[in-house]
Amino acid sequence: MVHMGRIVRMGHMGRMGLTKHGGEKCGKVVNKLSGTNDLNVKLARPLCGLTELRDYDPYISDLAALLTGVKPVIYIDLDIRSWPYIHELCRRFKLKYVFPEEEYHKEAFHLTPGKKIIILGFNQRKIREAARQWSISVVSVPWGVALGYPQCCVKTYAKWQHAESPFKKTPDLIKVISGQTRAKEQLSFTVNNIYNYYSRIRGGPKDEAMQQEIVAINSNITFATLQVISWHPCSYNCRKSLAAGEKIFAFMEYYMPNFAGHIKHYLARPVIFFDKYEFVTLDGRLRAGKLDYCGIPGPVSLAPAALFDKIRSLSEPAEKRRGARLDIKKLFSAAWKKKPELLNFGE
Image (tube, rainbow, N blue to C red):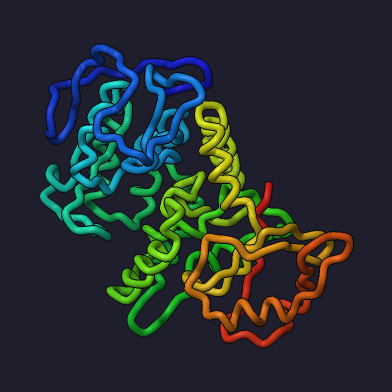
């Protein structure tokens, strides 16, 4: 795994090529990765000889979790055009890999057709165990645990997934997590999972279309990378998730402070959450039951204009500063079609 300031090299690579597992031995170190583009993130200091990383395939948060030992393996819904980049990462960090769909002759669900699942890690035994659990069920506790997610979080997620049926609609996972959160006065941005849709899509074509729409209207933001931890916590007070998030974000700040600042800029904000695609992100701070805010920035949701107007109508001019003040009691006592949750993500 990678520690701040030094690399601890592990394992060895097998044969080169797009095979079920393996890679090649580390060769000459160059600074640029093949398969990269203008979405590269510049590093503040070299990482195994690299001066930049890409922010998808894998997401930087996932790669950071693997390199810091937070997760034993990571899996990627891989665009095959990203293979040169993935292969170079494996070469640099001496990672091993497996393509479980080929290994087990089973096709995974892909939001975008033509992709492949790949599982990466340092330890071949753990990679193979994760692939085996994937072949059995991707909504099981053993699969989540094999990925290094806290068991408490995996159990909450699995219970939520299995509760859905054609005869019973369950609330979005965010509301379940919020309901299990005891102390809500101040939530860490490192566990903000509102923009993590990948494993919350389960409503068929309509749900998928709405997810694509919300990504499209936020085209100025790399929407899917707005996360520190890549799993859904069991609560926003989950100690294991908070500890993991702190470790991952410290890695980001050390190697890519500008990118870390970008992530925090969007995640460390209070959110009035109504539903999966209806929420209002506020540029403000909550104090003593009053939310002072100076704008409604992105990410933008699919909430109707009337919802934004109602929040503005419930607000008053803020004292001693520009902007507005929203009394939280007024927010919760107002009549809404969908009950709001205030998720006060901050430092």
